[in-house]
Image 1 (cartoon, rainbow, N blue to C red):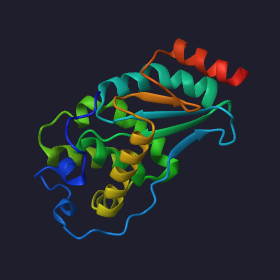
Image 2: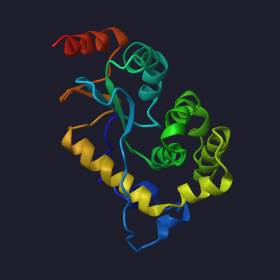
Image 3: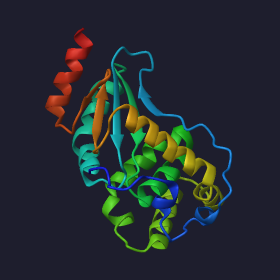
Length: 206
């Protein structure tokens, strides 16, 4: 997925639908910290950062066909530090990220699995209200209560902070498409597992 041709602001992401309701609020709230979501060995000399969007079909394919092997061979074994950074090309992707983060570190990657494996189902509607309800359903499947989901989806400060972080990170790493990867400071485009494995092994051998 390529970067859209407009300046990405919270207002642009929300468009005119105003779902959730905080999209209409003019007051600028204090912004919270938005931590990176991390798996693997935090002290590894090899750091792989993935930039991906929950509404990107290529990202869903990578997650289904490559990430499972990456996780088995390099993340779960503690060989690398894996960092996942969300990209927001549209409001649906932002809302999905808000629901994923609603479960905290413990549930984040489990919710991520559901978001990618059911992407065409939850994101397939042109009706924003339907998409929000689909995301709430995913959150409930992951064990979140309706009150918690509503609080997360109506957290305007967190939404703005997430957009700000996406913009700052993607500009720093020159990210213009998804999925993209940064391996120990070097950017790479989407790739198959064999090519990714070769890059990781080369870094580990240094």
